[in-house]
Image 1 (tube, rainbow, N blue to C red):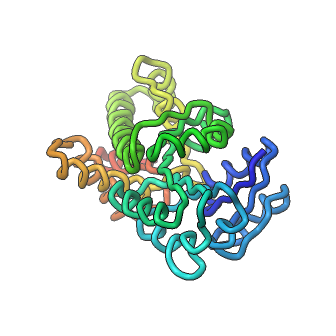
Image 2 (cartoon, rainbow, N blue to C red):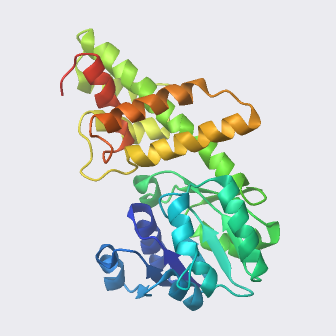
Length: 293
């Protein structure tokens, strides 16, 4: 059992806290909208009124937020996480943000005698609930060994990939493929559908074929019915694609399919679909193909 904190109790963060509570850990949490965390408070999570309060209460604080700008918001100021950290504490930052921004912040955390690790995840809500989530970790190896047991209580596969920022590079490299796969899957479904094969049949065949990655298996059926709440919406996916394109320019790696799928995300936003799961890329291509829902 560990004394943990968690900042950012959205869809994934909330489910992680639920899992940590089930494992018997003490968890103190904070979210900008307290009402979204009430179900966790009802299950025994302690509440703090600020990110600083979480860090002061916990030995190990985890966080998952939407982008680099929000990371700055929870880190800075008199009520930010930096103000609550001191020697011997750990901050596990699980968001997908700029590797450069994360490295710079890790340096400031280290100046306070604490340690920060970047630990983005690969998987979705259903992967987490099934206990199949994988975690990539960047930071000092000694710090990783200290917090590894906590991460293993979130997902069964925890991989150390290198110094600060390297796990984020790996996560960005992973996420660009999710969007590209979803576009290719959508192309296949629509090609079959416009050739006279029912959409349901096409989805069934493809999700049980050689191309059926875990992501295609659980997200492919979204082309039949989108979830009421996005698992990972268009804006979030496009943020990751743009991080990939930026990194590609920095290290001179052309990313042609990433560039194409990024434009489809822009089209989705233009159609007002930005709050839908990024699987709505199917709907963008369907409209372009003259196919109605």
